[in-house]
Image (cartoon, rainbow over all chains, first blue to last red; front, side, top):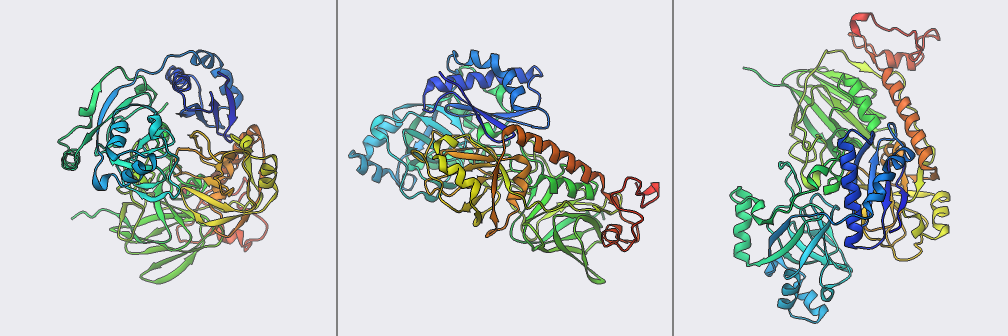
Length: 256
Length: 351
């Protein structure tokens, strides 16, 4: 694994472990991130504001009035070596309901046509796979998940939508995601997930964390509507979709 | 009957929102910092209003913001080169910016236009809003902070007061810096042709109409990618200059997405971000390259300059005579200068 240090202005730098989407690179990123969080909790790394883990890199945001690039890199050197040989994070497992029908699935027919399969086959493939949450970003609580079965791989839409409805479950370039908020977007919309992925009132506002595993469970339009009403009224706690707790290494990193 | 004192938004102008120093620590779950685009303006406005430097302010674009005191006097301070008008029972009067003014109950303050730039920070004494995830900054996309997560609109009210009742002024506003916007090449400068970075540094770019709190889309000579105009998504930072397939650069600002899949040719240094965000659509700009270490040195110098500026904030005389204007207009002969160390405009009970 070759590590590059990239400048991101005077107040951030990026430690890049590679340029592909690969669970091995992700393990290194998350291990370094966790080591930094521990060092910070011990009172080290003064001036480090926060870190941002992605598929294959970790970006460090720092206050140039307090610390500098060289100082930070010197402090990180021992942590970097250890990170490159780390096992993956033990994430949690989720089973999230998705409605793959009607208005909830505006691109399903077109995706099936493009791929030369039936809509049912697309749903069976998308809903029959365990996905790894590689990272959160783009929007609050937006999970980049993969990998989508090879038969479902498509480039982004040629014409991005100006408005993707919140809850949309989408695929593009081997990845799948859920849009927690209305936003512009270029992915193909296969369904709708009624579970709120982000709530600022929760201690941990993002439902999902990097390293978690997600399986989608197809539900009908009526059930989706019932779940929607249940979570809105507070009768359903989103944690009911948590399948098994295997320890949450990322809790301590929030706000590192 | 007790009435609470509030500031009412009579008109929000082009766009106005409550912002503070920003929401740190949550980029990892996709939450951008938000916060004032020009942090120096926020700090000066708060100093003029007698607030803590990072208290929430009302950030507005161009002219049109009008606010009124309701239920009691409210002290309001405007930082930014604005033409300001106060309307009360005795009619209208024009005021310079870079000072605070205490509005009597029912009086209103309006930003008629911005003389230069397009951002003003309006600090309000007693403006306290609950922090959401550590900040009162409004981030509209996810409905965080501010007033119910929304941009300001006519009829909304924020808590306010008059504090110690002493208005303050900044004797010498910061000089406009028309120099190039300084950038640090990278993190993906290698994804572009060698000519692309040279073009970015030599050519004029123009701010398009697509310029808001998320970012500023520029137009100018095309920046060519070496290969695909796409990378595996990684983190963006405020100031990232991302270049999509069109070859036209986009500078990301406080509300921008935290990750992106376009290569980033360079990053605007932190000290120049406020200046960039304040450029008006149609305005031309130039870039100049610095190293990350030079950028950090500039950040330290800029901070020292900001602190020195804030240290010059002076109380105005209780009768409303605006000493700052008197001195800057040179009506008082060259005996004292507002910035001179021995300058003592008021007796100690006003300090």
